Image (cartoon, rainbow, N blue to C red; front, side, top):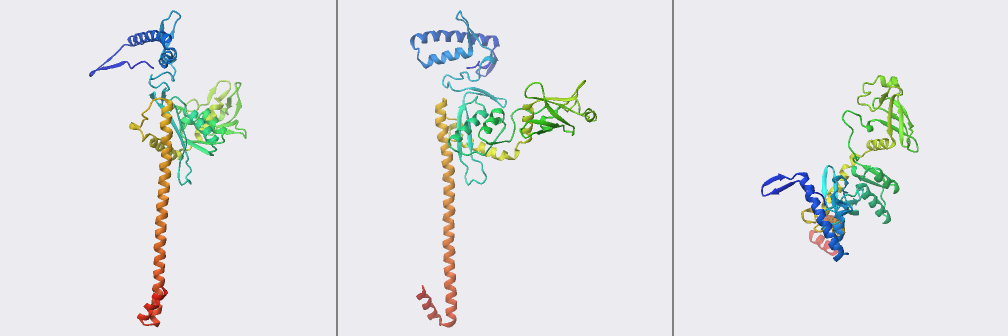
Length: 380
């Protein structure tokens, strides 16, 4: 549970409650909940209501030794704190600048080979909405590996990139083809790291960097692990008008033009250079599959609360999507076969008619018409 909005609507009038008054009101609620906890402990120690009350007090309040309670600051409240007593599994999440309170996240994996005659859903996860996308991909790859489903590559958006997603793909020897990268872009007054050219050795260790203006420098390990230093030629950088302006190289008084960076920065820059925006159409198809799952429910939302119930609604919905696709495929195949068979019978009929027509014309040249017809009738 989080603090209510500081705006309260009464009829058509909107007025603002001071923050101090809101905090005082929530503190009073905490004191009352503490008293309810003591009463439930005596009368219903095994009840679900007591568990919910204890959870709210632990997540939202700090309790002193004298029995008083104090409201926790908002930054100390976890995103997996209780959002609704009717749905204890629901969580809070901020994604793409939007806030999502309660509910769950659905992750769908489906085949995407252009040579397939039909694409099917191969895995579905339903988790609290604070679950990271990379974690969902890791679960999906593990599940499909256990069911012996071979995955050669995965096409994702930027939310699935990052160390955890890359480790999951490396674990199963899967190529990660992202259409975007997680994280923001560089400031307008600075070149992005992906505008530099990076060279690595056979083991994947960075060894050389080239700036956008063509100046090159070797990358040497720094004092701290995972850090690198590049010393550029002072004469080359002296001719560059972008030094100390757009270029990330810093002109040090003693060391000269120098670049300090981490190994992860180089890795992310190389991944940005290897993005696959041409696979965006595949992502669009995946989004349409998610819409197909939600379309079965009123207002595109499962009419249940709780993680287990939500899974019981989503999993059969995914099965139905596959069944509809299979039915459509076999129906179209049967219709095509029927049309092909009818076309073949029609062609055979026309060939037989043309054959007898040739026989009739040949006989009519040597026999009277009446005898030719009788001969054809006897052949039939």
